[in-house]
Image (cartoon, rainbow, N blue to C red; front, side, top):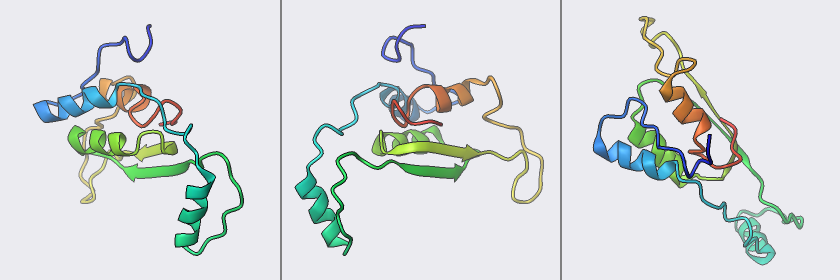
Length: 130
C-alpha cells in the first residue's frame, strides 16, 4: 500500500529515541550511487591492492550475513545506513537458544513488526534481499 516513501515508518521494539531517529532515516529510500561509475578510479583501486582491473562497468554486490538476537536497532540501522545499496543479500540468523543453551523468545518471529522492519522496509537498499 503506497511506496516506501509514503508509508509510515516502523520502529519494531525500538524504544530509545536515538534508535527511532536512525530507523526513520534508514527507511527513506534513496538512490544507490551507481551512475557515477568511473573506470579510471576503479582501475586505481584495483592497483592499490595489486589486483588486475578487467574493465567491469557495473558495481559488484557482496553478501552480508550475521547472527541476530538482542542487537539494538541503533546498531542495525547504523549498519544499514552505512552500507546502503552495497549488498546483494543481507542474511540474518536468529536462534531460539542462547549460547548457554537457555531458551529465548524469538524477536524476529514470522509476521512480527520487527521482522517486517528488517525485511521489507529497504533498510539495506532498494534491491537488497533480506
